[in-house]
Amino acid sequence: MAARGIDGWHRHHADHFGQERWEALHNSMHRDIEHLCYVNPFLEAAHRALLEREYGLEATTVPGAYSFDVPQENCLSRQFRAIDHSDEHVIFVTPDRDSEETSPPANSAALPRGPPAPFFFIDGAAAIAALALRTHDCDKVLDVCAAPGGKALVLASSMFGGRFGRDAFDPGVRGRLVCNEPSKERASRMQETMRNFLPASLLDPHTACGPHVVFTAADPGTPSNTMERNGPYDKILLDAPCTRDRNLLREREAGKLHAWSQGTLKVSSSWQLKWLYNALWLLREGGILLFCTAALSHDECDGVVERLVRKASGSFVLEVLPLEQGICDMVPALAAESTPWGTRILPDRTPFGPLYFCRLRLVRRVHGAVAHLPAP
Image (cartoon, rainbow, N blue to C red; front, side, top):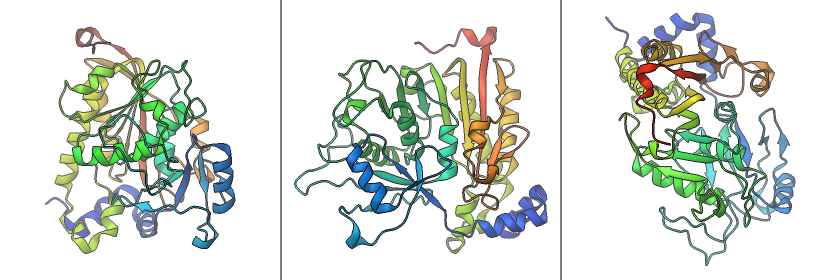
């Protein structure tokens, strides 16, 4: 009989990690997530300096992310209100705007004239995964499941930070970030969050090579969709829906862990495999696909990648990229763990995670795949 419920969940992971490691990992997931403060790279220097003083920001091993103190409200020159997206891995704040200014509609290309959101809080593992894609300002990049927007903002910051300001842009930048989210409700919230954070010039279709940030709401499960319009892509990030074990553990009162089964893992991994395979058709030769998941099970991590490589063998030659030293250095205590197909960051050995990611390079398309190249 297949393992089910809380006892089955424990047995499944103890079999994979070993009993002693699983007990340590299980205990670590009871802790609150240790967020980092990801500072808006498009801020004016004076605004940034003020934040550093008031929040005691100190650089971490993760580029662009800082440890922080929680100051007393009466010690702050400006107040920022947290926005609840019901995802404890990332917390956004509202921009500090004058009371008479209003937000634009979600489908508006313009940003309000008030100050941008100065920072957001993110699980360090999620930021590391986005940075592991190694994006540049000339790349075409796709975030397939971009909501709630934390990784997408890290990608936009790494691509365009330093090249764009609040009221200026660099006409030499040719890159584009496509943020796709199949859920229209989540897509709407994500768009508002990103518009609050990014310079208006990045979303302006009338600038040279613009817009540099584009939003779509395509279904990744369909082999042909609106994401193709901006492809083929140099880099693709797929953070597919998965079994979020930390959330299951911390939401036991809601009964979700009681409903756990190996059958749900199989269903989830099958969706992940389908979406990954479809993403390969949007990638140019030489491009990189990064798959990440907050799941712990082998079925939704290495197992999916292994199945993808087998399934794609008739259409694509793929290369699994090793963990670079620069990425490894971002993980506190150098505690990133290599797996047969990827890398995982786990909360019993780091302040972050759990998170798994794998980077695949599309070396070349074989004969049968060439006829299905996306239109440039």
